[in-house]
Image 1 (cartoon, helix red, strand yellow):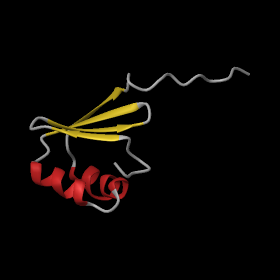
Image 2: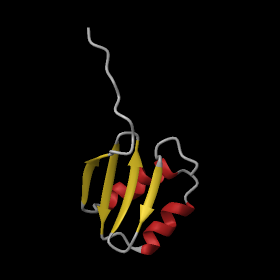
Image 3: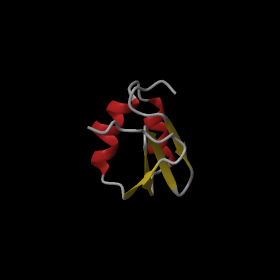
Image 4: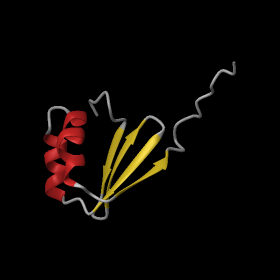
Length: 75
């Protein structure tokens, strides 16, 4: 997928999944038409932030266990 915001997108009849680095957002009750409009958008990140999120879908954020942990340097 060509996006600087999203790593991957998944969709089924129950939920739409957006994966960013370190986070997974699950949006529920997303119609197939909405998913198709999202996939057709020239900028996925812009559509996500300016259209999709404003629709008020119920969502849940979960940790992305597929990404390796990010190690932070101690001071």
